[in-house]
Image (cartoon, rainbow, N blue to C red):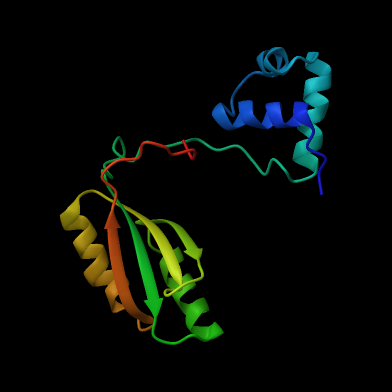
Length: 150
């Protein structure tokens, strides 16, 4: 397990806010010299605490203004059913996240589509045709007052 002291917490906080922050500015914000800051960042990367850097995309700008969280219950609770379902949803561009969860259903998906019509097509023609699927419940996102993925 990585050592996450107060300085490393500050580094991680700043990088979560802006992964493209220049090292000199990051060092200034956390109160380190640039070389000490870079060593800490590299160590966090080496330890796997920082797994990578990504661009945050705006779904609306990409034509995907409809976002929903979808719970999916499987008809069969076997490993083969889960693996088959996971393979299928991995191929769907609309599915941005797939989480195997506990509770009354097996999966929680974050789905992006152009609009309600496009989502209905996905729901009916893709997700709804999977043999493993027993139940689908859609929760349409009306707003996201807090979203730390961005």
